[in-house]
Image (cartoon, rainbow, N blue to C red; front, side, top):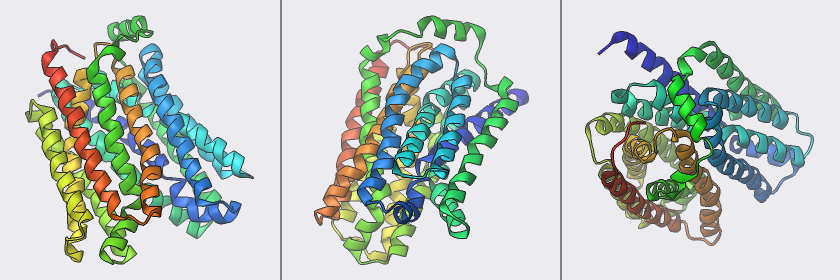
Length: 401
């Protein structure tokens, strides 16, 4: 194994991984400030939720479109633009005098968030050795989870010590620093000239949309992110209602879920590097997670063990992460990586926009168990899409990305 190649791979994985973490950090900067924004602008919960919906709807549509842009002008330029838009969106939010400007800031940040999956995965596929890609995808997923975990803590801490405007202003510095770091390391984030030329030539092709595996992968992301959106928004409330545990314990259960998911991605990277049938790995992990979710819904788990069960759900779904990304990579035709990842990952934003609304209706109706029943249902449905995509991959002629 070439040490120089290993160092180069590690730098690219690190740069793309931290960029991904920044994008996920921005998913929750507004949610972490809801108590302050509600008071400052006298907003309803529906109006606060709409800010999140704007972010994810714009990001979902933009993600599908940005994949074409990645294949057309190059992933590096698009990634730079994404960080600039995130920082710009935070500045608009920090200076917002009214609700309309909050909506505009959320829209701008959503546009920035749209580029990270197609740009990041394209850079990994072109610049990381094939044998290290499973580990690259593992780091990519872990960094996203860290971003999710860090955002509420960061913005709430700054807002408590100063103000919500200062918190958003501080958040705007993060993509600015990341953009500077990427610019200084820009030579590590290129693609070979032949690959870039081929992508330019194929930039307007929609042929990949005819591939069933692409839509199977899209469906997988939509279904799993509906479940994840529900867990992120209402797991603490649901567990408190079902088990009578304190809100602090329920919050600990959610934190354990996220940290275990990150740990699962570490293990999943090693497993994916050795496994061949990635859809089967996903199926086993999600069946286990769905079964545990149903146990929680039945209110039969002893209270102190709720935290451990939530951790086990996170661990099993995390293990499936790298296998999922390799499955998508296999579905991408040559020179269409950006477009495929853009369309497929728009399913994530779509599901994240739908999940909180859907499960919020169940919670409003007084059905806390419905959250975990729904999570189990969507995870089980996702298995069918993963197996479908894996079957299409095995039936297809192998190709190199």
